[in-house]
Length: 121
Image 1: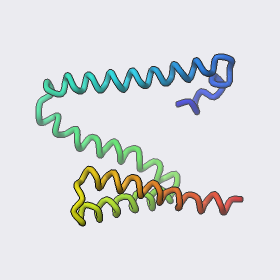
Image 2: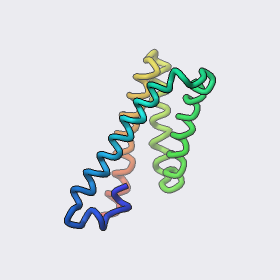
Image 3: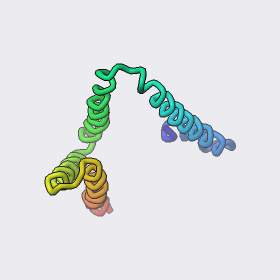
């Protein structure tokens, strides 16, 4: 978001701009979490169960444009998926497998994308 408003950030009150941006995001996060907790019991179970699918769809919606823009991100994503699969195959719980796959996939991403930067220099 701040990349869209670089000129405002360079002005004299740039720190005030960033503080208001952060505060707005924080209040939205906390307010949304509160509403989700309160309304979670009101929403029908069928709709609540479908939110798990919506979360995966949102993730894919964020991933696909990045992969189209930079093909190496596909390598990083597949690496994280393989690590996640192997961790679950070897008996790790799903939650921990996701964490391990994400962290190791991120480290793999540093390695994959650093090759590109070294070649540019």
